[in-house]
Image (cartoon, rainbow, N blue to C red; front, side):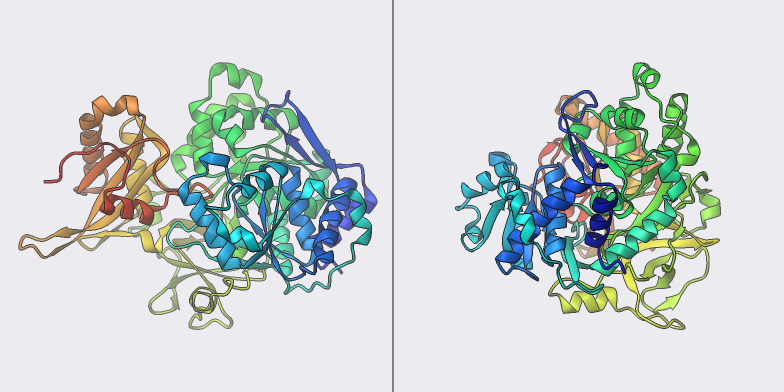
Length: 579
């Protein structure tokens, strides 16, 4: 009986100790320095970390993980699981450049999780020792560089007393619409969601053998659910090989991702929609000539609005390099459901509904709504009217509600939020549902996601999805950076000084050199949104690159952007005077 990923790691280490579990590209380049860790070595290092934690009586305690990208994080994470310690993945400090927002988030996580120990790489632990002023909380916390735990410590490891209901780790939510909350993911949740990912993505024994165990290439952050539960943990679940590199190296040169896929020929790789857009911007004829993407069977796309136009352009652009349109794999998930809820069918083109087919309430000006596939085995997805708590028929937009063994236990030490989010009841259905806060509709069993419940902009009784306005703005002028636009509503003023209802505001990042054209860019955005959505925009603000608030997973924080707009704290490149 497999109780946890620790049991599976033990099995893989016994049966094929020399097989490479993870390959890490230190520079992000296939011809640069490479670090590899085998299953035997991974099991030994995980047990050494686990024994160190056990000897200090930390079973059940929370351990924050602060690592740069690389295999050491995985050893630390699996070490926590092997010790019965609750892992809390965090974003490591970036030396002096570690900004105020990141420090504030780290403080909040340390306090909320009641962290007792911090595990990290040597450089991170060294940096923390010089941050006593900014982080006085560290006084009562043990910090250790796990590289310094000797291999011999593994001999003292003993199997923890785990059940399916034991909490494995706290996945702090991105906080795109609220303060971050720690989702309690149990060992049972983890195993079930790995089963869902395996089934939905077609990771069968035959497919694994065909690919010579080379199943993943990933640059996704490992402290975020998509990067961790997907490529990293599905690798150890299956006993296969993954090639990893740093998100920073991907952002610096997006072609590194495609080059690694071409070289290592994995079955599965993916990221949010913006990653595909970045690749399109760097798709030179020379790059296309050098690539062979024919092995890529699952190009998953999730974690942010999936653009039909992006899917089409990516498939068309990279077809000469062997990329198949059938590999495009839109999917949907969230931390509260461990990760995956729905996924496309392998070797099948994604479903793109024209606006007329999607119905009057689907809200997509992008000409097509994108299907995110069907629920995994034992996962139930319904579309609910959140006020009446009733299931809606096919084609009607409502809140996406989810039930199944992957749905997490609740929010850490937050009974009220747990009750509101994880304990919803639905007329005509037994059991409790997870309220996702996302809007969508079902059609022939397939899920189409249309937006966030709390982000809706309502003007004159009509619903507008901010991502639609953002897309229109970004397409209006090439100076706008893809995935770096925030649309939100503010209260307008009526003719007699009273409230005038919601009015949309658009904040967009542009390169500073485009500042002289600011007035023209703003006019183009205004007219583009007016034409596409029939909306008069209250304000368009152009800001400096990298200044729009985003979550740790790269999602636009519209509420934080709105607050910065209202407080006058945006890093403005240009904005017209309000009339």
